[in-house]
Amino acid sequence: MAAPRGVRKKDLKIFVDTALEMGADDVRVIRASTILCEAWVRLKCQFGCGGYNKRLMCPPFTPAPAEMKEVVSCYRRAILIHAKDNNIVNEIIPHLEREIFFAGHYKALGLGSGPCRLCEKCDTGSRCKHPYEARPAMEACGIDVFATARANGMGIEVVHTRRRRGDYYGVILVD
Image (cartoon, rainbow, N blue to C red; front, side, top):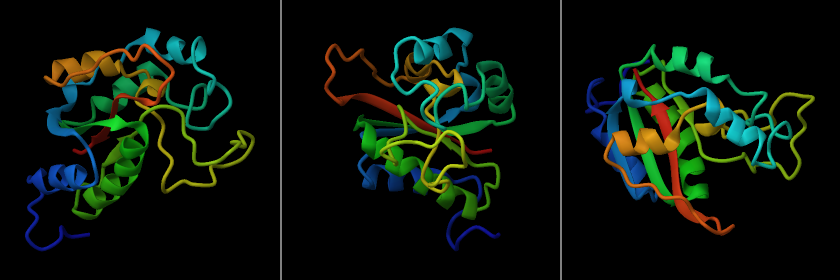
């Protein structure tokens, strides 16, 4: 499909602006090579998150770090999205992924933040009921979100309480 009128294939600024309009606090076009995949990250999901093995967008149903590293190596550019609210990130990612795809970037692939909460209870024995909205989290695929954010000059801190506000990131691999 051709890019919409006025959008050149190489121009990603329109998508940065869209993410900001949708509530992101910071959005940057980054080199995909700055996305760091590490084996230890997935263990943090397994030993520290209640979503492990309970949601299709969480491990062990998501790509392993080695596979994700290989996937990331197929891309040159990505869009890194930061918000102080997890829900904002997870609303922006599938919407923007779709827009980027229809603008001619057919490889567009989005990853969100934290466990998917679209269903009250995920049926891991069947297909996802929300394939157009649900995306695995960066960390569920072995991406070191802290190192990736910092490598791209974006702030991120550990949240010391169980409150939901903090630094949340999503990424869309573009081309």
